[in-house]
Image (tube, rainbow, N blue to C red; front, side):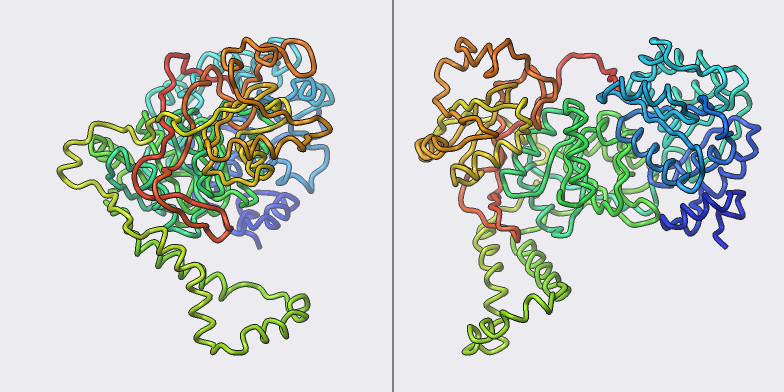
Length: 617
């Protein structure tokens, strides 16, 4: 018998979760479900991310609600779109063997008309982000007067994002006698106050010590010179060939710039931040869940609610401003009882912050050294050998080629074939990492470090700036545009500088030596039936030309928020080139070119200035 049955969960739900691989309740599920099934208490559950909180409150809700009635009986509030969709999909999966269960996801960035239609058709469980939920309430499009249960998930993050006022207004539309269940990874004073305000004598369950980190996560930090930060980051990635990680930055701009630099350097990476449209966010997350992305570069807000299995590493490219956010970041790995590694790349002035984090999470960091070139070569070589050893051979398809292959190798001994095969990749790595500098900061350099300038912008000397009549309205992201340019002009990403993606046009830079090649190559290219036009940027920079103010299809064009992979607004002049151009490079196993000689990338982090910290979901 599945242990969930002994907790009081009905068989049709148990059968559904058994198919998902839920064989044994997690500690939070084992202790919370019996309490919540009683339906008699308000509840506060403190547990780290990745411990199974969704099932801990989702399964009891499915037991307690009356699905013969078609009005809102439960409201679940969460901070981000991703988490909203994840909870909704989980609840639908848990209840797939039940009848008449209607769960609606309500979140910003999607068509509100569709959400209103779903609500009008009838719903028992509403999963919502506060901003969009309040919008629907203000339209008088939903009635919460019969809601029996309210769940506040990731409560600490909702408060961090400035949703206190929205939560107050939303809960004022619900009955006083409802039960409130609050789940949080940390318990700062703000969460304690919200529990006191909305709850009566709640049952409090704490898994582990409050605010501490997951015991399955090991924590490491690397101290590097500020100018070497990006090169050190790439070397850490190269030293972990099987990495499947999330990389955290402080700002949307830094997130986008690092992602673009990684793409140009041949890594499977993309950015996730608040300026992307919902469609773009969904596209990025689908690629990451499908593991066609190896690295997801994200801000704290955008990454909340990401529940992806088998994340091996969390890398803090920049430490968070709020110490508590480190717990949320590291919680993206080591989910469901697995092991994970959380890495921080810092300069010497941030050592004090590492000590602060250690006190908060109750665990010590291990000081690690950036691997040298030989260590990386060795690791990559044996990763390839391991991959070849375990590759699945399609006997039926390969059989027809075996005679020709054997004939080609007939003059070689087995040992010679292995040596040559290994050298095919190993020589590339040796050349790439020949004379690779030590990227670890010495004591003298640490004490003399003048802050984090690792992604400093540089001038675009040696580049030509061009104009193209395609932009974000044509569904291009910056990554898409980079690939479009390189594929059609037959040039490498190294030859492309910054890309300024606009609504209906794009400015981009290419090395002077390939500018004519790019212009000529695009003379015969069309995109969805439209001729692609490439011209020198000239006076288009100031927006005085027709394209600067009007769209190709007529009418004044407005640059869309989040349009095209970067999609950030009001920042068109910053240099977004990535990767040091010193020295040579190598192609990784996918055949893409990578750059790494130490030294800095030419893109630079810029803190987002001003602006209200509050974000609408």
